[in-house]
Image (cartoon, rainbow, N blue to C red; front, side, top):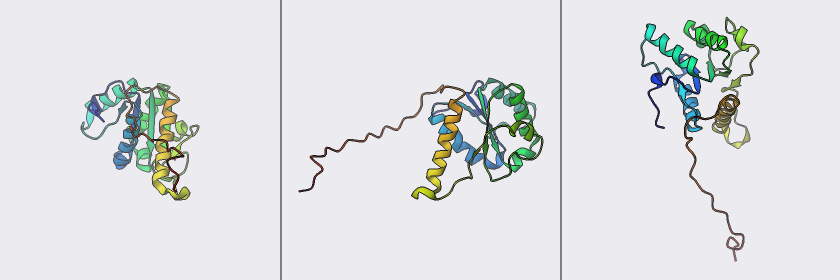
Length: 177
């Protein structure tokens, strides 16, 4: 996927708020969203801290149309993550909470006021049913995130499409004699 530098994208469709302890899992969510055609803003830890970070986060958050909050215990304890979520709520942006770890709902702390009324997607609520195991379940969760984002915004990038074609089998040719 050809994307602009994450921290330079000023008007993304989706702002992804997370604590760096789950960066790899959150990157997978971003990749699925971008393949579906949504531009995403995600701080990948390359900016450093201080005023520059706060300014870029503010710019990305205010320019976005929907916020995905990737919830972990460290996320709910993070002062910066709390500020991001409160700003998103004050800006009346749709917030899609995604539980990255099994934990109580709403999570304890200041975020519970915002999150308690929202329906979350549980990335760890997966099992080995259906014969496909956790990989099929995770793909279902990624699809659910994309569907929820679609309720609030249309894709703004050209989605990557699977170019695999399935050739129909001619019933006459497929018979064994």
